[in-house]
View (cartoon, chains in turn cyan, green):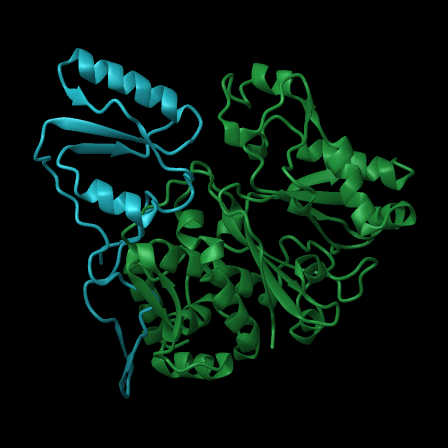
Length: 115
Length: 336
């Protein structure tokens, strides 16, 4: 039997409905875990454009790291937007308008960076 | 216990239906009984996490309650608790995934404490009692099962704390000040469940203080150590736990409002020291509201401080529980 107990903060889910089969009858086990439907976020692995957009989320040192990132990437000849966008609250999901706008970005979006 | 039941427990644990401890298998017949006790139908929508495209139906909460070991008589409490956990103000996914390693702190107050047999005396913050342990566990399992977006999100808690397995405190049914929930707008006669995301408790020991002020100074100093997460933006808050021996001194000198005002006024640190040690950025953002060369409170406003009366007699300890800075609101609901 494979132990699927997560070891790095992840939740591993069963691939099929769990049943209990005793001496007399089988009983359904009710799945306690809600699932997203449809998939919550579509991620494009390879950007269409060779450009980087940086998003700060106001955690300690995040802006300093992103500014350094901007400098290093430009030194390596990669186009980086001048404006570093700001997500106002690191603990909350990205506002829908911002997510919608960034989902249409052809370049690479780099966000959630801090120490 | 039939061997098949042990197999079912192993089956749950091997398929991610667990918080790391053995669970009661969520047999349909048990879940139906819990649904009835909670006053819901299986398909009732009890919450939504729009950013994860997740709708949560009542059967998920009922199954989780069974798995945590809750009794069906806890049903009305669990109904209020479920709605609180899924209130958008609580930000359940943020609590689950934060590097801050926060847990759900559940506070039960009012007549329900005695009705359901919660421990509110000895070891009140970690009682070996079924009601405390299973209700607290239920809240953490809901955080884990729902907050993780159905397995999409991964927790990034850096160190976390043991409360992520269970963290439920019950207040004394008879209190020196008004019950806990009156600090969040409910009448004193109500039974209530309140939740907030929180770090682990810090113990405050003072056996020789002879005044209420000396106890509050000790508590304030505990809120003031360099390591408190609050220093950056002060957006969390604190729950102060006062057991009877310390309360006897504090109540003789302060009302609850006066105690909060005293701590707010006195529990402060020099911003220059905080900057030098790295607890405030050298160039802080405006939201941090840093005033150079001034004394800084770990609270942005006094209403971020609340008090709960619980714990045993015969020991001169209090405790401070820092709330996680990213979930800024306490959600408090009556138990019908």
